[in-house]
Length: 394
Image 1 (cartoon, helix red, strand yellow):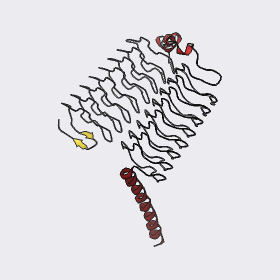
Image 2: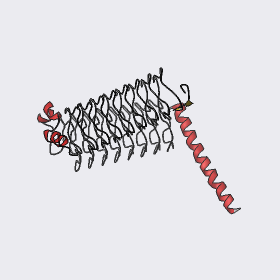
Image 3: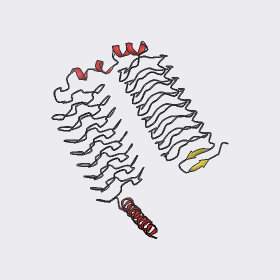
Image 4: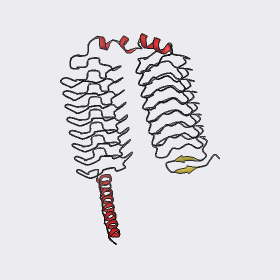
């Protein structure tokens, strides 16, 4: 009897807490106003909260991925561990907000106000922060790899251990910031003000934004090349099988018909790279940046493309059977006539993707955003969509 009573009490409080959260979500979605609300772990993916009033709200662990929060008031809000993948926070107020360990992969924070905010250990890979105000913010161990930080105000910010590799810091102001252990390799520092080293005319020289001859020799001699600068290098038909090239910079590189099978390209920057007919079977590309890359006719069988920037990628006639493309942004990608059998795209943004004549048999597209995606003549059998399983082409 005593245990039954305890279980009854626990069930009551659990139900009450869930009801309270549901009430807060209803209030927010109805009024776009929920200051000081308890929205912890709420699932609000793809929502529209433009000009939303969320000051002081508790949003830790909430999923706001792909949501629009432009001009929203999130002053002093708790967004620790929140998912804001691909979210639009342009012109939002995040002053004094807690974003510790938040995931802002590919998020847009143009001209946002983050004065005094806590972004320690946050992920902002590929994010757009042009003109953002981050005065005195805590960015310890945060990752801004490949991010656009042009004209950002980082004065007196704590940047210890912050990763700025491959980012755009043109004309950023880091005066008075703590930069011990910060990583700037491959970053564009033209006109930037950095303690102990302001940007110089040399930083603005386009010649500094091409590959390193020593790194090119290393890769051609069969060595691993972790973090190498191979930007714009011509590696047509190169044998790079099973190489460790984690966090390497391949922007605008020519890798057509190259053998990258089994290579570790975790965190690599392959934006605008030419990978036509390349072999990337079973390669590791987690957290890689592939925006605007050309992968037409490439082989990506069993490849790990987890949490990738694949916006506007050309994957026409590519083979991706059994590949993992989870939690990635493929908006406006071209997958016409591609082989996507048994591909896992769970949690990805597939808005405006061209799937014309693609083979989607056995593919998993659950929990994806598919606004304006084209499925004309696609082969569909045992294919999981956000609305259920379809067998139109069995």
